[in-house]
Image 1 (cartoon, one colour):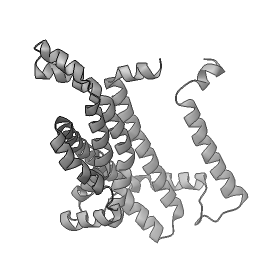
Image 2 (tube, one colour; image 1 turned 90 degrees about the horizontal axis):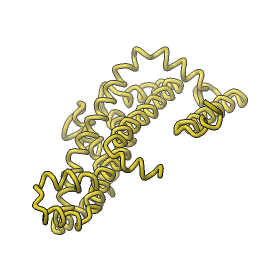
Image 3 (cartoon, one colour; image 1 turned 90 degrees about the vertical axis):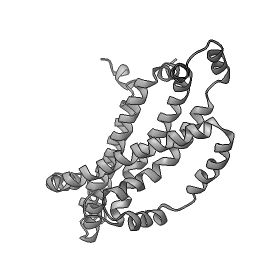
Image 4 (spheres, one colour; image 1 turned 135 degrees about the vertical axis):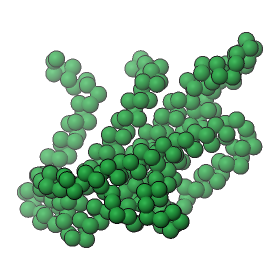
Length: 257
């Protein structure tokens, strides 16, 4: 593989950016001799990550489960409501304004209420994640339903096509790109939502670990947890992106045309 072909790989420049950011971080923390409690170096963060690996594992698993479950819940209700809005102008008029207004409510006001109503267990964190991911999934899915060409629908109905055939050949190909666009956004928000819920109350999760690290002034552990949150968000985004690419190959071909 030549140097030119390597630079054309989709991950190459992203990897260069990450390496550059870590290198700059190391240079700043070393040259300026920043105290550990203010800005731990990447090496100190890695040491804290390795030293606390056994302690971090259950926290990481809890946050991952809450993130995936909340994203799945948002997907289920978001696509259903988007389909209802796309099916009727009346339902759109009833639902869409409330959907937009829900985003004007600060998360830090909603999350404590959810914890009060549903307790400090994982179910409350799942609902917080679902609340955060619901809007982008619903709006993008609705735009996908609006993208369905009515001429195709009329043509298939004229041919006597069954409803499931109409959905398979017209509705799904038109809506899937929008649905996965919303899922990609939701995937990046889901881990953050779980961590915020754990911050406000709970006994396990990366948010709990970060709170304890902050209270004990162990900034290196705090940065280690932040790195895990970042990479978990990236991993979940990549999974959604890969599944979306496999289910919508025509979009990929269009982008590379």
